Length: 124
Length: 124
Image (cartoon, rainbow over all chains, first blue to last red; front, side, top):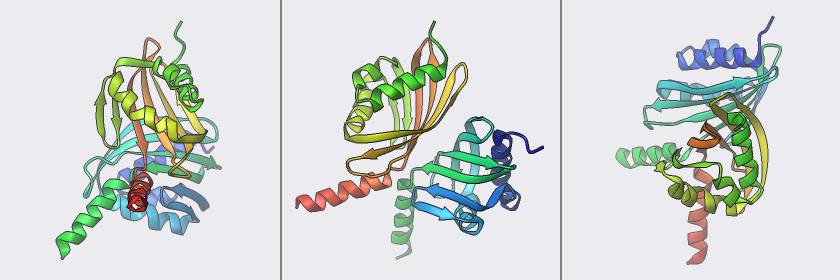
C-alpha cells in the first residue's frame, strides 16, 4: 500500500518543513522532473541541489491548503525564511508508486532577488 | 443553491481567462481581501485594479489543477502573457454565499519586473 498522492505529498512536505530533508528526499523519484520559476530540473540530484539550500533558510512554515486525488496533489503554504519574511509557495505534485515523479512549484523570486542584491551591497 | 466553493472558483477562473472580466467580478465579494505578492488589497475596487490589467495581457491559459471543499478552492494554472511567455499562478480562494471573500495568489514577479525594466530601456 502506498496511500494516496496526498499522503505522499504531505509526508514529503512535513519532512522538509520539519528540517529532515534527507527523509523528504525518500519521497522523490530518482527520475523526478521539477518545473520551477527558473526552469526545468531533471533528476533527484538536481532537485536536491534546488530544494536543499532553500530548506536550510526556512525558519517556519504554515500549510494553507492541501488537496489531492489518486495521482496528484496540490499544496499551498507560507514560509518564513531568513532573507524573506513571508515567502508563500504552491506545489503541484504527481505521484507514482508512492514517490513524487513531477513537481511544479510556484513562488515569487522577486523578494529573494532583492535580498540577494541588498546583501551584495552590504558586502561591499 | 450556490454550489461548492470549487464551482464558484472555476466560474470565476473561466470568466477571467475567457476575457470576460466584468463577469469574473460578479463572483468577487464587495469586501474581498486579496493577499498577493506585492501585499494585501482590500475591497472589490482594489482587486479590480490589480487583476483587470493582468487579464488584458493574458494571451492563453491552461488549468493545471483544481480542487475544493465546501468553503475553499485551490487552483494552479499556467498563463501565456504578452510580456512573459509562461507565468504560472496559484490561487487559494475562500467562498461564502457563492462569492469569493478571500484570495491568496502566488506568482513569480521576477520575469514581469525584468520585462518592465527591458521596456524602459527600449523606450529611452
